[in-house]
Length: 213
Image (cartoon, rainbow, N blue to C red; front, side, top):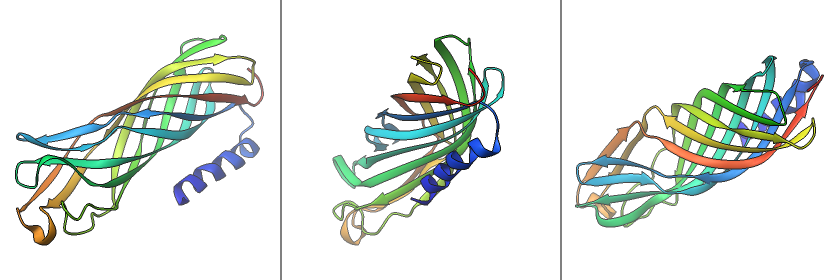
């Protein structure tokens, strides 16, 4: 994947360019779904697992500039009185988040609580559309997004530790999804968009490299 390759390239060259502390945090966890309501109906993203990697560069004592990538593969679902009276799958959905942000530690000890925020893009890629619900392929979309996180790094040594954190992800305008009711568009269609919140929890290892603790 092109976006992930670019991020990994940054991971590889940054220690050569910046003579400072660097943190690399691969992670795995759960991403909770989200729902957009329109009247008594809704379109939603289902729950799924998620994985990612964050690279942080210490720009001040206890403050890091971060580049992060998160991926989750899920399903897009609908419940609509005309199109799908009971909840039905619309399509599979891949979501790729790329964020630039800042993270701040509360203290510099073995147990290091932190908070952070980021701004970037989310790339949404539908596939395997359900022909009983939609009569054409859904388009890929790219939206602005921002995020917040809070958690703790528990350092086993000065170099390796355990990362535990919670995330709140906000696509600025998720949706714009047009769903036509079944083959031939029978039953009409709906177009839904709006701001939503996607939360999650993850854990992983943190590797701290560079000039010092």
